[in-house]
Length: 95
Image (cartoon, rainbow, N blue to C red; front, side):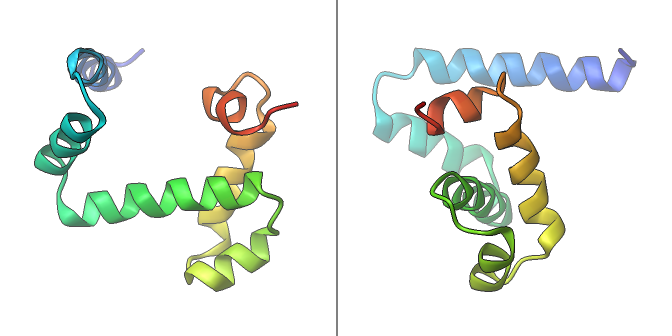
């Protein structure tokens, strides 16, 4: 793993540890709103919306059109859901 990727992973681990220590959904939301910019919150929210719509069975083209995003952004979410080992897949797809 290159040095920059290792640093990013360490920071993600630190953020995960803080989130695990937070005692309520409200505190988790406030923490995320404090550390993320408005644009980052919107991007993260849109990505999560895309993945949830895919899990509900909407087509990639429908989602791209409805949310006014590129098909590439939707395809990224689709690839995550196709990975049976993905945490997101395990959380959203109940088989």
